[in-house]
Length: 164
Image 1 (cartoon, rainbow, N blue to C red):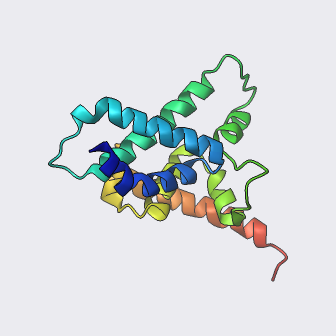
Image 2: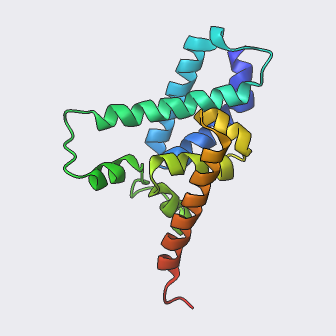
């Protein structure tokens, strides 16, 4: 049964992992950890409901847990919140291909804004689904998307200054 889920949803899940962590190795780890959690908690899944939102929520929660673990790490000293945000932004590794200014700008967004953007624009979730996955009211997701669009517009305007 799990093989069917992996075959049906694996590609889309990996796309979500790559959107959250453009570094391929981090995305691979997130993908594997998500499936491990699915196996561990498959008894909690209600077959009467759609599987994909449940899977997506597990992936997003796994991603958030990893960020919290990283932020609490005694081996890392974050002297400023900016250092922490830059580390947690999961920016692509230098050896990876160039994702372009938009992806780089999305990668620099604060986590809560980036998650809303990834789910709504990259994964194609509607507002209600994204709100359900993030466990937030629809209005909060709307405001986060609005704030993200504003920040992205500013960031991309800086990228294009002098081109026209």
